[in-house]
Image (cartoon, rainbow, N blue to C red; front, side, top):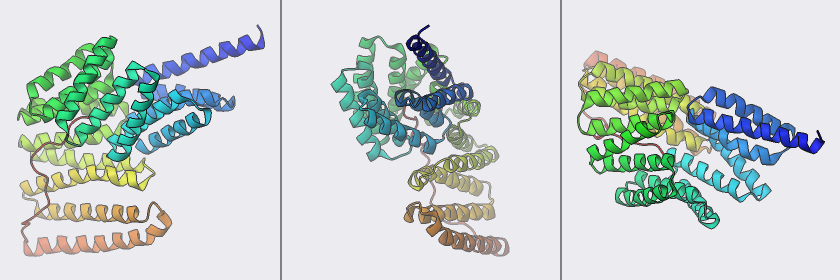
Length: 395
């Protein structure tokens, strides 16, 4: 066999392994997918082949996102964009814009997400790749939904559904229908939403990540219909899938939503346990993020669980514990604000954070003592309203 033929055989084997990693990722087997993708990346680096590196890095980035490790995922997709620009690879650049845009949208950086997704749409239209065009419109529609522009989002999803049906792509069609279901829920059309969600389980039973999102969104619809036992059932299924995937962000979402459903169903003790667990997983997600801006964005979700834990403790007449949770939550918020104001310069922020931490410990001790000694009643808290959170992740 000639040297050139041997290289072609090796390249074919590498491509086959990379595709295997993609299939494993799509079916939720993240550990196996990670192992194979890491080997492919190392082989690409050893061969100094940046084109192969460009092909496998998005797979690893998506695996990290599926695990809730957003900081790592952002770094990987930024590296993809850097390589694509260096190699003048338009398709690689398009995928980097799409992945980064979707990821920033999940993290609440809507302006940055919109800019990147618009770039992706522009490239997709220029290249005339129908699946990419549909995907770009769908992600922009999801961003509109997050901005509470539900009518506009629904119209965009309808356009996507028409294009996906014409393209004869059942997987893409199911994804669009799922997103339409999310908007239908937000518009109060819960039965129609549930019908859309159920199509995902029927048509793509092996898409474990998509089904996990489906259970979360079904839970929102059931909660709004005040069918809390059904909501709890599907949120438990979402939690189980997130645990299977090792997805800390998914665990945080499922536990927070379980807490709200148990609260509304009158099971306050279980709600308390759920919110405490959600806060724990939120901390793990934030630890995986290196950028302070991104960490502060994720911290906003944690604050929701703090406030609902506070509300639950008050309902249980555990006033002292509610005070303690309030002070702890405020302390965490202050520390995050200090970190944000120092722009990630940890050395400069460390003294301030340490001083704030000592002050908060002292303040918490004083407040707790006052509650126990004087029986002070809690009269006012900044609590969330009784409406459920916006469902759905970017698909």
